[in-house]
Length: 297
Image (cartoon, rainbow, N blue to C red; front, top):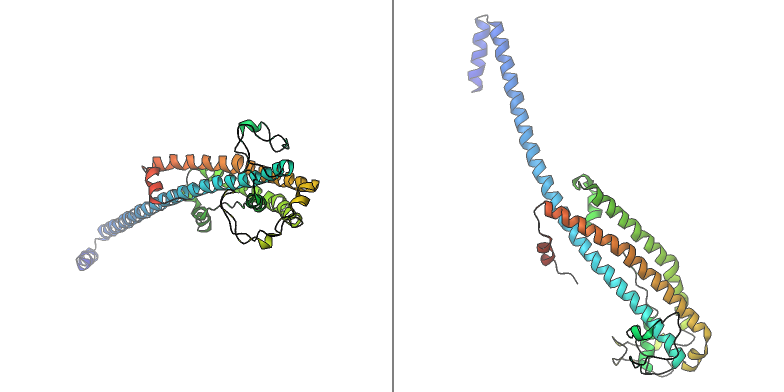
């Protein structure tokens, strides 16, 4: 084929037909340009198809990441409620001693800062009715639930410079906002929650030798493995006003952390999930099928 076109060009030159040669050469150039443009178009089409597939993959992975974070938000809120419940339980114990709570009658001596309308909130605390349940609540009141936002897919999108593949600006803005809110909560946890609980644990050692506690029950009413001798100085614990002051501080810190996680991160996470569902729907992807593909705790 190349020899054929070379022969035509030579004939034009030999016969002195320069104008025809130039026209032919121009035609060849046009054909080459058209060929290059077609090749580029095909390449761009293939590249665009790859980019669209990658964008869909990112949307699906982001959705699953946010489902996981939504579960973690619920877990953190529940853990904070457990810490609050333990402080309330100990406050009631200090007021009333070893008692088995009757949900219908409630408890007469109750710190009103911890308990309002007890009759309507009979599940607010686990009753301290023996040494094991007392130890359970002493342990549980010293738990700190750390909340960390986990977004591996978003981190990958940023690190690879593929942020342009997420075309929905509102979605990107809301994810950034969520990161800011989670960062603020982490800072509050580090500066407020953790130091308060750390101080409480140090204070608690005056009345409770946690080093002798081998294992704890899963619930206050379950048996546990304890060296029960000399674990708790019950008389001193019940007579020290500072104990309730410490419990009050732990309660307030846990309550604030819980409200922040629920009201800020929790709400924002659900907003992002809604936006991701809309994006997936536009791509013809059913989010429910993704949820069944990954087993969430």
